[in-house]
Length: 238
Image 1 (cartoon, helix red, strand yellow):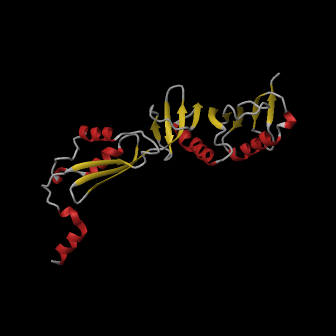
Image 2 (cartoon, one colour):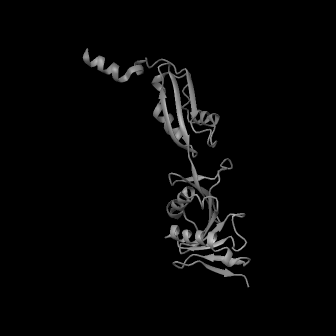
Image 3 (cartoon, rainbow, N blue to C red):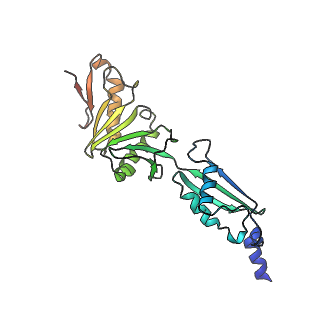
């Protein structure tokens, strides 16, 4: 008797007879206000296509784990939680993936999300993010460049000033300043060199832009080079 009571306490509403039909499906995208990469209709159709749509089916053939896995397989879904209510309703609560970095190479375009995973660059993704072009592989994008993109988002000064990063090689990386944030004494092109030490390099560039304007007033440069410790080398147009 005690064992039956304990089982009842553990299973709770799941003591519902397995031949009871599922009454409804409620899919909710909890971060829909922040982004809209997937729709409820799209996910419902995904379940139908996988022969997992639960409404009208008896509970003995409804697999919550398979439904959850199917929803998670959608390329724009980050997390999903599928459960059954005491009224025999199936509820799915999910979040969407968050893009961090857009990568464009001569052969492909994709995104890196905040979990450092490759994410498809669909037209519905309108978020502003750092663009990386050139000789960029997925491993470099998901490590060094993603780390830089996170740092950039958290830096009050550079967040709106750097919009583009170009990789010629791991030892030669260029940054491009956003139009409108460039003073008339500088160019948009900045030579970063290798990625290591970017915080120190950009700190000296910030000092140059904030304090060096008057000393270089009205001079035009085609690039600013940050590769040399303690210096900003400004290369002037001839």
